[in-house]
Length: 312
Image (cartoon, rainbow, N blue to C red; front, top):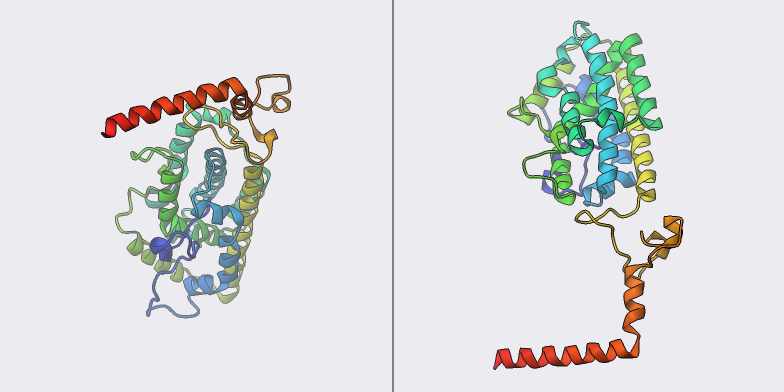
């Protein structure tokens, strides 16, 4: 769910939530884009240092957790875009309404179909942390639409920035298809130049007819949006720690003799019944038998002789 920064293209473990790549000489310190940039720095720092985000950037993301993050994004963007549609003609938000270029809901539907199948709606549910986020977005859209700018800025500007780095990390770490199934969320097919579009978006923000107090409230709301995102990250991190290692190549992971034996999928207590022993432990026990050791020694001798003959 994180959105990385423009500056992170050169290093995937650097700052990941920064939106501004270069200074713009045409902006004023009182412009909304500058106020948001300066006013959310601390929130940026905290968000990019959450364990979930740091693990994601290092490629330590389990597929099941990535799927849950996609679910959280789906509910978040469904709420955000519903409220954006509601306020598309409202002068406090209308200049920032770019449905063809920015809206992510349909892209997320494609990702969910890929991960969960055609009946994806029956397999997902909104988590507690995500629901709090969704409720706030709906409240803002219906009662304080001028604050909708903060939620749009926080999400979309990040998606267009280093979110593209996260796309590559996810594709590589999860071995997703090169045809981009599962990462449609990160694909902005109707934006040919992300940097130019972000400049246009910031210019539109700065042109909004807002007084000083409203701008301050928007900055405060942007920080609130970051807190909601961090709560979702923390929730995902806790869920990630409870997930067992995923199956490799469609099978169960095999215990390697290290760590907690109870994590082995073949462990009888985990299965809730007496079942087959751990393959690793069974193999070790078998190898300790004298007769087996004798057979293994003979096999090694034969193999060594064959190799020596081949190299002559």
